[in-house]
Length: 168
Image (cartoon, rainbow, N blue to C red; front, side, top):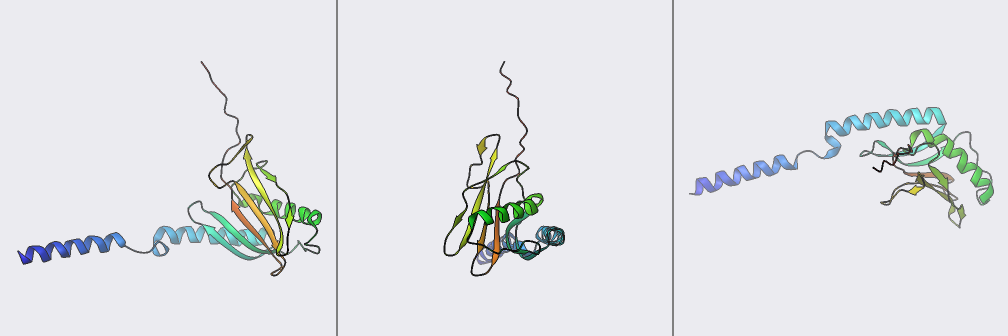
């Protein structure tokens, strides 16, 4: 009886250990995704002149947070919201090929400034509808203390094609 109990316990432990497995960071899938996103980040930095850090979203295979500056964008008046509107539009033009939102889906909200920085939120609207579920925006800000731009990409890849209504 004791041998059966120990054998069952051993089998149960063996199953639990295999279910726990390797952490995601050590799997082959993670390594492949890391290599693809690293290559994409290198291309982004080379094409846009970006200098800084990029955080990835492995589930959607895109950049999730970009912090740094672009070599050709010099920010001289970060408290001036009219000036920062132009800066944010230039930054949007640079990052647009690397985000999920398609052309014509992002609409700039109000630019706000406080003691920490200046920021704006671009809402993603597809065929007149906002994206539900807490996503569908691109948030940009400039931090006065660090003198760096911060870009949070939470856009979704949704087609703008008009779907015809067929009522029979």
